[in-house]
Length: 185
Image 1: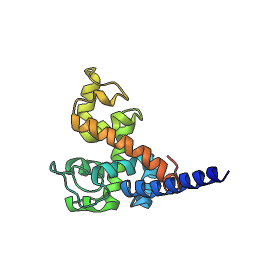
Image 2: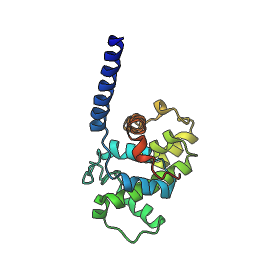
Image 3: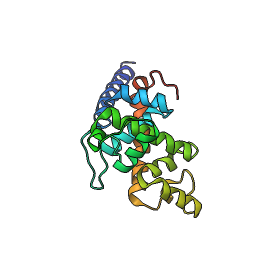
């Protein structure tokens, strides 16, 4: 009986340490902003957090070699178009480093992709990274079926989708109580 008790205590201790360690690997910042815009645009907040994790690891000042900016790594042209679509005042490139603005625009853009690709997360994430036009061409030409991330022609995009999906599983597991607040999507 004592052995079973010690094993149970050991498993619980290991789980708690693993949880802390995994939260270090999968951090969560800006949760109120994520929840707000996830609710506003009908996107799963765990998906938004996962995109931010993969794109910038929650660092708002990141600029990619391609010119993508901020938490959700928005390309300026896409961000300006999206900002206009949602009725934001004219924004400047430096505004994309503002977490509030970046998450608002990025979440709306992700929402528009989910709508365009019939809520298919794989296709929407592929479009987020590789371009909606490319994904539409891949589908039309028969190169890509839904939910078949291994068929994505661009290696970078295929890896992006896989990393976001992995992060998505961890964010749902680690932060289920924190990000589930007021979800209305």
